[in-house]
Image 1 (cartoon, rainbow, N blue to C red):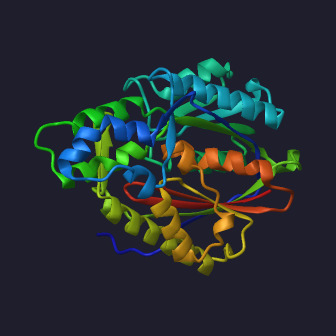
Image 2: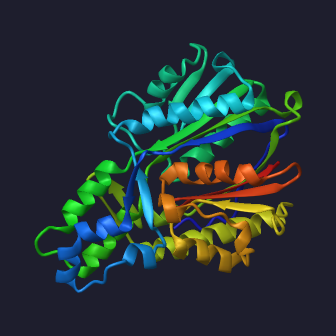
Length: 344
């Protein structure tokens, strides 16, 4: 275990969020449907129905009609974000895809989204994969490049498709000889949902109407790299340890940030990565946050991976007014955390 204490601090001087949008996956899958699919397994293991709703607070989630629907969904969200920003596709100098989902190992997902959006040949494009933190990491990279003058405008996208993982998990949970402990290890996979989001960033001095990305901190606790491990065939999660250690990482990062001059005690909104009611409630208790300032999308969308936080921010943006302050709180299994302040 690395005992070095501290955060990485990022302070942006001239970066604004100009547009943020989501694309909703069209197919609804309720937790009651999943209970029905697993009814015989629950009976055999002596487990109650309704665990997904009672324990995780997830009532439903969305799915794409096809496994690669997240690519078109990311492009749709990107088009809306461009329209909000008033920016043409040919003005984008960088596009980062922060999603976990992919259909093939090669090429990158970014190239398909770049192509569908009709971005220029000058626009750099690549994937940043860091579990549920990919979108936030992508925003930090894009903001740093805008600050340095390398680019003027950037787009960050994340589209997730959990169709295959859900189907494979249900199949796995039906296997002969499965134990209650093994069932609960794979339980978290059933909370996952699909969706897409996109954001456009640009220079604040040219866009006084934009929302200033002030910066923030990141912090690593990578000795937790075995708590959530998976692929599209399945995922195994030590749910309680992941929650406890993830919340502690956020608290540690926050407290260190305060010593570095950040003040996040009275934000208008705390937009968190959406996992479950247990995770959200634990963070609210740990930092004594006003519950009404913590928007929740997991009840109807589940955990949409890297797209969860920007989707929540896109929805929250409809209620924000000039001068409001937002703290985006991202956590990625592994573990890594990032806290970013945005002034509306």
